[in-house]
Length: 429
Image 1 (cartoon, rainbow, N blue to C red):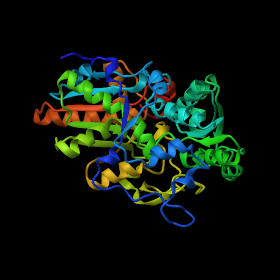
Image 2 (cartoon, rainbow, N blue to C red):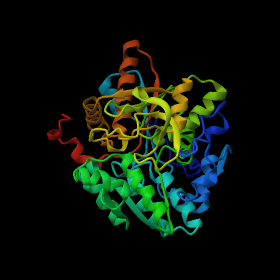
Image 3 (spheres, rainbow, N blue to C red):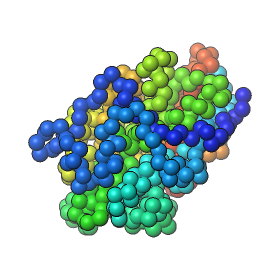
């Protein structure tokens, strides 16, 4: 069997796939925090472009990808699907391990898929600036790139612990012309409260979201852009799974276990949702694993209830697994997974029993990343390393029963800008 599936241009989808069209029931709707009534689409217009709102609420099964966005996608998509043959040999397992590698994109992660679409929709409506938050910096750099392609300005509120741990991501954002601010900080009322209490506050994605939303609604020509959690973002990421389905067919394999790391849920959803859609009709028995850090275990230890998506309570109430908007996770190195909530659709699938959630300690995750790097020659982003750890665990389970299972995971980004996270001095050795 070939180690790589081909990257034939025909594998690039012309439409996004919307799982909501195939679900027998949808999760409870977002609520207006003032009235606690279901949110009306027009109530989101001060924050998001109207085109994005329409994609958030649509139940259309296939949503066309604009030609202009497809042209930019075609510079790096389809991304490769690779058999981890060296890892398999190292583990001495009958399992075959495959990964969809999103690190070949212009900013090294899957985040560019939705960033380009959101920047395009904003420009269509005359928006001049997009504000956003970023944890580890993958999303902030992706949006800065997308804005540079669409002639927009990007203003990024970066969680302070990551801002200081990951200068490479900050530099990348600035190279694309984006503005980067430490969060929480004095630029907004939402950030000022925490900043005045502690100028070295490590921050959280919830705090950074509050700052970005406040900046968007208070400045003309400005809208907000979110890199995960919302239905439209998960819709855009479906290009990953749609490509993977065709690539698996080319290799003649049927995945039996599909894995992704989860913080907000977008890269896991991007790979898994098209397969879950098939699973709902064909009943092919695929096991889906969503893997999170023990330090921020929203799926495995959080409550499934309504909660704000941000710390200051500026956003609508979302029905999701969460740890509470005031939860401040420790400054783990998988900064992109330091979020108090989970995508409502991912939460819904866990509740339905279609997805299994797991949480891993940081040391196990970094050990898995080191094994993968030494065998496959790619350094995973610390977030993606959670999926690597699960794939190794499943492969070793298959070894116990001598079962030749097919495992597919999403390597959602490379770790070259996160190299400091792997320094033994940080306690990960």
